[in-house]
Every structure is written in C-alpha cells, then in structure tokens.
Image (cartoon, rainbow, N blue to C red; front, side, top):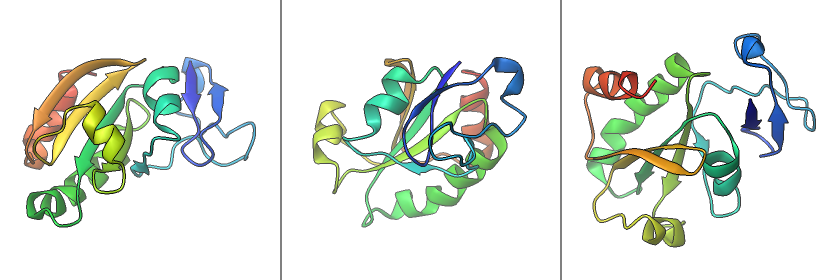
Length: 140
C-alpha cells in the first residue's frame, strides 16, 4: 500500500500486513502513523488525498467556528482509534482558501472522506462521537 508520511509527506510503500507494526518513513525515519490529525495544505493535500492508498478523513474548519472547536477533540480521538484504517487531516479554511473553494465548502465544519482522489462521503456539521464513529465504520 502506498502511504504518505504524516511528517514529511513522502510516499512510502508499506505491505498491508505491516500496517499495524508501526512502520517508519523511508526518508525522515519517523512513524508513518502519528495517531493525530495532520495539517493539510495546498502543498501536501495531493500526496495524502490522491496518491496515498489510505483513506483520508478531512475536517474543514476555522478558528472562529464554535462547532469546529467543539468537534476538534472528537476528531483527534478518532485519529487515535481509527489509524491505520484511515488517515485524519484538518484543513483550516481561512488559511487554505483555495482548497475550501475547490471543494465548494459552504458551511463548517464539513467532513469528507477521500480514497485515491475519489470523494467517498461528505458530511456537513459537527457530529457526536458515536455518530462520527458510525459514519466512519460505514466506510471502513
């Protein structure tokens, strides 16, 4: 499986049977799974959403958004639980306006799941932990 490193964004080939063995990046030598959401930008989005074979769950958010702030701990906790089944990333819509426009983000938080460049699912609004886990389970 091709996976983008959460630290240096380098693409790495990791055998499926080694996903749970804490594989490390061939370039930066850090863990391929950080158990935390990564910050996505225009510079690294393509490697994680299009080139990586690991499904990517994206949270489009903004610092001034109350529901975004209340959902952030749920999203962070999910990254700890669901990796390596999914990679979790956050896109700050204030700083990454081109990405927000590309995906026609009209309300935040907006959640999306990508797999090899294909949008699998989209959900507007913050979800309680149980509903978020159920949503993820339906795409795992």
